[in-house]
Length: 182
Image 1: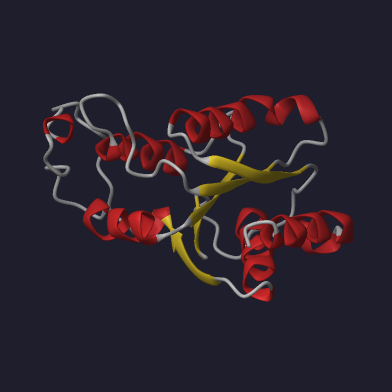
Image 2: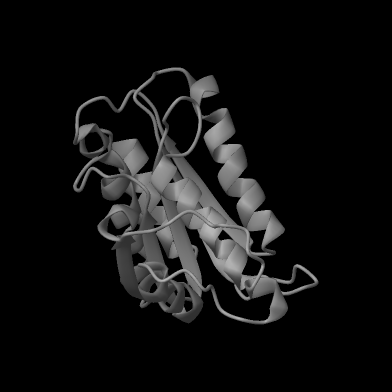
């Protein structure tokens, strides 16, 4: 099993990154292989709705998606991590999900169908309600693409860059989710 971590936070070594890494550590501990991308490392344009992909062509936009897409397709599983920005996923994660439209055919069957997926939501607020929309967006993306949800971890009150590391229960939960991929 090869699992790709997708970090939708611009903050390297922040809470989203830490939790994605911990899930990937669980994958690796069970014999899986891992890869990770930071969406913010790539110059990604928004989908321009040209629909070339639905006509059987690959995405016509010439940007970082040409590096990301093959890595997504190669993976057997995805770990999608986002911080909560105004009750929703980050702009980086949203553009990633929008560009996954290029994996659909004219019948809306997805090339990423059947992959396993886990979600990470990192939130500075202590209120669980603040994460509801982010979790729903990620879960609906996974369901629409007919992927299998392995699990998800939601971190609350993660205000400092490394607060996730201080929450042993949260880290253990993330690690165990990674083990479920195998």
